[in-house]
Length: 343
Image: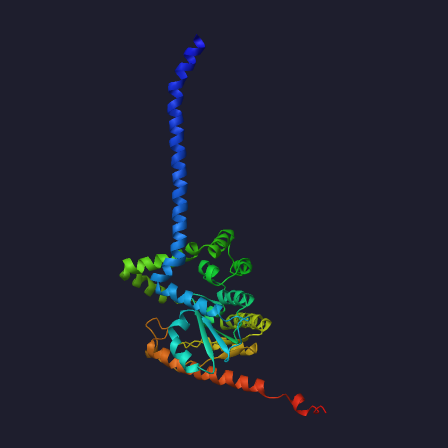
């Protein structure tokens, strides 16, 4: 009798507990499902929707497709293919449609520009492109002296758009990343949303608060980098240009270091470093060729007038260099000329 009473009294107390447990489980499942749904939506939107509304993202994706078409398995082009890579200095300083028109039909020009990239981004980016079968005749790398000696990297965005899996750990090591940043680099390689989150945030900021965004961009543009002594700059630039040269030679690609116009003399050190390593360097507008009126207010990027002059000078320089090299390749060697004619 006592036992039945105890059992009957326990039922009212256990039922609310079971209902509470069900509500907790339901809330947990709903929370997990919501997180998964938001994650999947964000990933899909960043892969397919964001490039349709962002001019910068659309441009970079377009450059990627053009570069991917330079494949060793494709039919040999009738003209040598020149791949121009760099950051905003190349983007603002080069009239891309104009140089394509200027060089056609002698040379096919393909551009690949990602803002804020530096030496490590392009060393490992080119390594991945070459390993993937991209085979231009010539790679032209446009960097300032500060960017050429830098050990920084754009990080997550480069992990997605420039690096392959085999490049992630080496670039993290060379950039001095800790375990947290390295794991973020790996995640960014696989996730479009994670790699583009800063770009998406800037896009939203530019649309919702353009005045504030412009002020932030102005502050960033006017931050002057403190460079090490000249001897250290030349030593680092020599090491980096030599590494790029060895990488390109490994895949049978010619390398040219393109020096962007500048109002200061520091880029002359990059010319010296490349020449000391016997790396081809193109300085179409040396220091003193352009005054401040050819530059934007930040003093680093060319304005439209400066870009027109730089594009014309680069087209002349590249055409002369490449066509001369092509004629030299077609000339018979002295050995072949003096060899006996088979009977």
